Image (cartoon, rainbow, N blue to C red; front, top):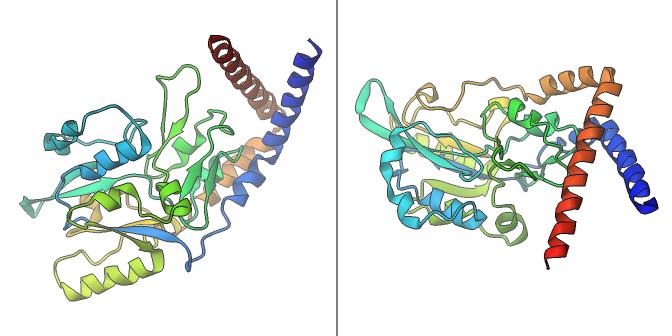
Length: 301
């Protein structure tokens, strides 16, 4: 009983500290990127064949589902507008340019890994973090399930495991963090792309490469590299044959979004006590559930 009470008090103090430190933790994740070490991916939609091999590779690399490889050979799904979800970190969609309806193009969608991510700024407990080398990564052990990151993301990428009543998580592409950062490999989707529509490298080099392609092939590309400046820049950047308004990539300004999310967050914390009590309670519930699950697992072994 004493241990339980001590655990309870310790956890409540830790939870309160986490809430108080929330904005600071978020700020730590927004220290910008170093252009000399930051990685990115250049997506050339004119080369994409819509084969969905990137979807299969992502599914296998992240163990997202038990779907068979043959299921990813169905290209009829490209005509439907799809978004990333808990068991699909990336999806490929098809779009057409009104002036050239016979010319169809495909575009891969996933987390953009923004240079100054709104999701990181919105997270009040530091569960989202921006690595200076490019990836925006998620720590489920810190997450309290507030889902502010879902609301803050201008690309509507993070998804939530609503079907998991016990330990739901926010799910999104993690830029194959272990492969890229820890093993020095390229992301799974890039490695498998048969048409080389995906190019991995240092962000600065990718920008130079994109403009070289535009200069070498006049009229082939719409002269705008999406993601170079949008909301402060993104790690994933796109080249397309037409205006991006015809795709699902939103029209955004160049100013980073965290300035807005931080102002909202600071407004919430002016009242302090309500969020403290709310998130302390949420944290306690999640801690109790996880502890109970751990005890049940030990009893069953």
